[in-house]
Image 1: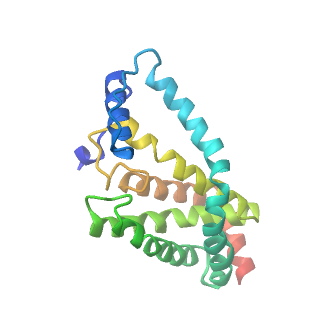
Image 2: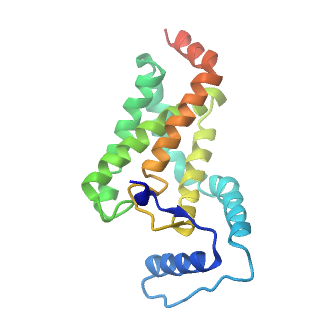
Length: 204
């Protein structure tokens, strides 16, 4: 199983190879071959990370607003009587199933369509409480919109810095991120339990 997760690789040779491979995948007609040796891939990683987390969220804001208006504005409000976690799980399930047409078209898991649908649902279910938390905490859908845009942008780092990765395990919508989501949820519940309970009391 560990082999499926791949390995983080900051070597210039590995980065150059994966950048070339990614470019040719995105642009099939491209014959460009990269040889990044003058700049450390580690420096590029932090530059990309800052760009993805800050500018990615802003640039993608208009693209994510429509989706988040539906999930975190309309549906979260309509299902709040279920409670924080049950509402989040319900929205996460619908959100995951909503991606089925895109997955069938070859997005996210082109080599594992059926299993990919299950993984996508697990991903959306486990990240949905984080989105709900951001919405309640800020009392706005702006925060989840920015967070959604950041996730969409940061996905490019996975194929660039993980060698021998598997789309089901080591992608931004893979098992590695699902496990990270669960850890984040536990941290939220442990360190901000009063706020979660406060949400429940308001709903009741």
